[in-house]
Image (cartoon, rainbow, N blue to C red; front, side):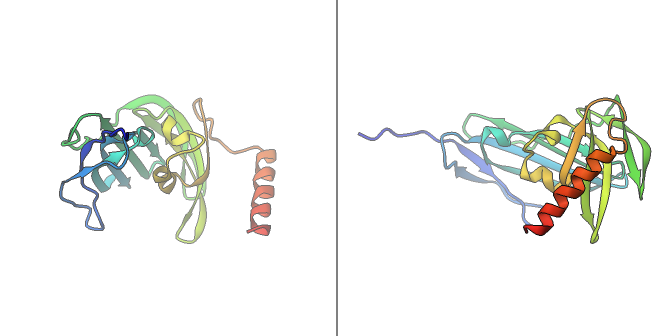
Length: 195
């Protein structure tokens, strides 16, 4: 005898290139799924650049909240999950950015000595390298714990770059030591040789 497994019905609204969508009802593919609503907001130069709102079936590990602030660019991701039929009818509001007292370095061009006041749940300093316009640039700033996990969400990697590192303590993302630079060069060389 087969046992029937109950799955949730959730609202689904995944925006395409127009950043808008229409709610539809979808039966989740797995009993492990929850209903989720997500908001992603990016800021460039202090102004809101993009706001994407979505609803979907999601696994518990995808119900996240995190932010990364590199001074001129900031990304916030907020999601809420629930466990009853069609419970994701409302979109999630973006978090309020209130300074939290933590301070990290950020970069202006090649100079990475500017003080950045962290906000909300940004309790780590972050240092990353990203390909921007064909050039590898160092980015420094503030980040929440979720952005700094060993295996950040693929969604986060788009906004924090690869090979990012985090630390706790004011201004801990200062210039790296010579040994760390040598290790990075060695790893880069290995990747180039074997890719």
